[in-house]
Length: 442
Image 1 (cartoon, rainbow, N blue to C red):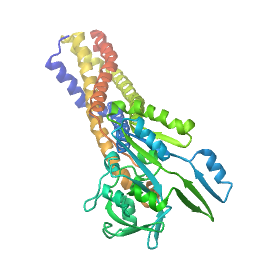
Image 2 (cartoon, rainbow, N blue to C red):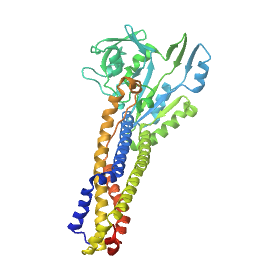
Image 3 (cartoon, one colour):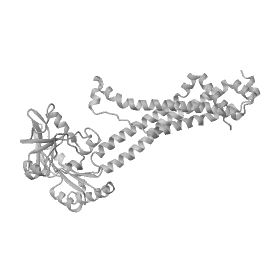
Image 4 (cartoon, one colour):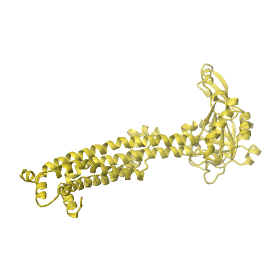
């Protein structure tokens, strides 16, 4: 087959003469390519959002957390006062320090039932901890403040570092650093404010069971001295308490390659004092990262397959229109054959038309898909801010998109290939027209 400029020119001229029909014919390809790009961008955006939330917990971290066992919850509901003793102890901490070769092992101790300043009150999320938590948990201090230091623990100082949400709640118009905050009946001086952590209301928040932006950190030695091990909670005229020595332990592995094996080792160690791990939970962000990657890869394949159906429909549409065009242009085919055009020239002309339609539709689809992907992320927050939809926005519904180059390239190549594939049959039908019969066609 020889493709000459005259054949290409005739094919493109035919498309220009029927511009509206050409655009409508390629509409299926346009929507198919746009669907693939939008679907993949939504899937990739959600994946990146989840990965960032999990990574903020530290890819090399292993979090061991005390949790109330199911049996203590059922007993507590039958009594007006109840103190549940569960979770990790100092013995568990010493056992981990002895048998686990980690970079850091950082204890956290939950204390206090209420945080207050004047008439403003909220439930306490106060934790006694060590200065090493700042680096282990990827936390950052806002300018003008500091984190806990070793001197605070040695002096058992009544100092606190508060989360960004606590700062907004209690000090909306002033700098919290240097001001006082009451935890139960104890008064603490604020020495620093944590920068916002991207886990509030997101995947990471679900993992750790709370909004980290509402945390308050105090020296662990101060927590032991001032509060002891029992934390009381009052609800509807009754009270319940938790006697927990250590609420969480952050363990940092030397590298991501050792995280999974170290987590298994920690599980075996914790089973010594906690059979079946009923009151202890072990969170491994690295395992969660791998699960998210596998799940989103599968979802991307599924979404792309669904969107690719539009390309198939578009290809069938092109074939139907081109078959109708063959009948409509039978006399033209006969004239071209009579003046010397070969069957291959006729076939190439029709393939150029279908290929051009597909390529044109693919380019329009790329523009439409990229535009929709960008517009969705920008438009959805505005839409949810409208009065009628504000309640949905308050729940935390959001959308993040991330356009990937491979979705653009693959969708365009598939679109062009689909057009050519479905254009072969009409091209062959056109090339097989008998010149004499074609010239007689009305």
